[in-house]
Structure formats: structure tokens, C-alpha cells
Length: 423
Ligand code: GCU
Image 1: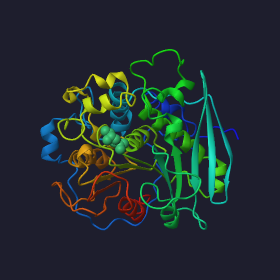
Image 2: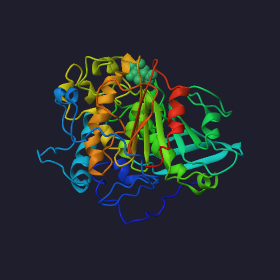
Image 3: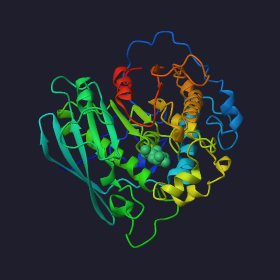
């Protein structure tokens, strides 16, 4: 089946087009010039929850002197959704591309899908994309509840290759718990999109767009960027009639990733407003963790030394010099607004710097506040909050699990139990 562009429901892509080639060219993005379109269902109003005043940036974050998401490069204060979407959001997207994640691949010249794998409530889809230098294929596995319409779909950037054709149970990708809770799971085989290996990472989608014998441009995205791009191609598929026939609602898709997959999920959600929910589980450095806490957890130097294929050369200039970055990671979370940003951390996950993830979460709230969604759900901005409790505002969710690094049943219990697709 050839995936054809879907007509846009409301006019042309405007405000974000210049800032994000990926958003502008993606097959079915719907953006108006006054609102970033993210379909979030409206549910019962949350109980009058205690609010961390959104305009009040917590002292530890203020002390880091991180760039203010609500001040444009010209120095002007951003005070409305319109100014945010027309001026600041495009500036930030460009800065994250230029300095951290690299330029994204363009939209493929064609995308075809082979849906012959699997049957009934489990389907294996092979997505083939074409670029100027060739083609690449990767697998998306879809599991839907045996009966009833799914309440929403979790699109997992499965960097571990954990999800096979048979539903597994427990831990990182508990297929039966997800479908049992009434949701669908779409698992993207990330290593097929771009192998997680310094010597072969271009072998998936990247070399369909760049000549294999030549070095990539210094500012071109690498593995994490390719995975984020792959999530958007999976979303293209989830918008097709075939996915619809399985009960998938393309307006209720949460992109989720753990750790390195969480970095990619955040970057996908920041660029592609079709995701109404974006979940970062223990994403740490160059994910939810504030970069300016470079001495806590994994530093910019360490991540680039150990994983030279994840980010562009341009990011490596900031090793030991996080303060020179024109952005920080709370602004990445803010780019998801008005979609729901979900941050899951773990107490003993020192490499990911859970305190730095918490501060980023709080630091994104002033942008959510522009949309009237600034309630973080937390009762205090003091670290640490109570463990094992899902905090939930109308557009932001947070939890701190006790224990170490992992996407565990306890995390899924919170994601599955907290009506993420409702306000
Ligand atoms: C390493 C890496 C982290 C990453 C993690 C993971 O620990 O340093 O940045 O998040 O792997 O993906 O599990």
C-alpha cells in the first residue's frame, strides 16, 4: 500500500513551516497559524489541584541561569500563545536542530507499507521509505485489544528490539498489560531505522538520504534524530485507513521512549505536533535532564564520547561548556505544549540525574501556562516529591519511581492508569 498525503483539515501549514522542515513536509500534519494542533480529548476538569505557580521558576533552576523559553532571541518577552508559536517556538526548534540534535531528514519521496505480517489483533507492518540515495525498511508491530476500540495508542521507540511478533508480558514492553488496559501498542524497531552502533548507524534510513561514501555534514542528525524521524513515519502509518480499521485513533497517540529512546521521543514530540502525548522515561542527558547540570549525572562530554553516533558533530563543541548552549532541555519539554508532556524518573538513576529532569519539568510550566495548562500537578517545587505517585495537571504529568534505571511495570502502571489522553 502506498501511503498518500491526507488532505489537511484546516488550511495550510503556516507558522511552523519555516522552522521545521520535518513538520512542514510531514504527510498529514495539521497546523493552523494560531495554534499548534494537538488533539487532546477534553475530559472532566481535574480536581482543584495544588499548583506550582508557573511563573515562579524554582530557585535551583534560576541559579543555573538557563535561557528563558519565554524570551526571544531579540530579548523580547513572549507573553501570548501567538508570540510563542510564531516567534519563539520556531527559534527554539531551530536552535535544538543546530546545536544539539542536528538537522532532521526530509520527508521521504515515497513511503509504502506491507501489512501482510501478523493477523487479528497483532499486525506486523513493514514501512519502506525512499530518498534520493535509495530505500530503507523498518518494522512497526501493532497490538490492539481483543475487543473494543483502543482508548489510545502508545508508540514505543523500541531501541532494545524487545517487541517480537508474540505479545510479551512485563517490564519494558508489557504488551498484554497495555492491551488489557484498553490501549494499543505500536512498537517501532528503532535499530532497523538506524542501528545503534558507531560504525553502522547510517545503514538504515540515513543512507537513503546521504551518499554512503561521504561524511555526513557536521550538523546532520545521527541516530537519535533518525529514531525521532522514524516515529513520525510510524505516525504517518497510524493515520492511514488501515490503522483506522484496527481501531487506531490517530488523534490519540503517545510517543514513548525509555532512556536513549526517551531522548528520541522528546525530540519527535517537540517537532511533530501530531503527538498529543509525549512520554520521556528516564531519558536523562540530552533528554529531560537540564544540560546546565553538567556535573550531575552524565555530562555532554561523556555521552558524546561513549555514543559518538547519537548526535551531530556540532553538539560535541559543548563538551565541558554547557553554559554556552543557547537553549536548555526545559525548553525542549516546552516545545511539546499544548500536548501533554510526561516525565518519568527513578530515584536511583544517577546517570539520568532525576533532579535535573524534575527541574526541567518545572521549567517548562511557564510555556504551558500560556495555554492555561501551567498546573504541573505537583504540590510543591521542592525536591524530591513523593515516590510512586503520578502527579497530573491538565497538560503535564510527572512521577518519580523508587529504584534504578528502567522502564518497569510500576512506570507502566502509572502511564496506563492516568488517562493521559484526557485533559
Ligand atoms: C547509557 C547512556 C544514557 C542512556 C542509557 C540508555 O547509560 O549513557 O545516555 O540514556 O545508556 O539508553 O539506557
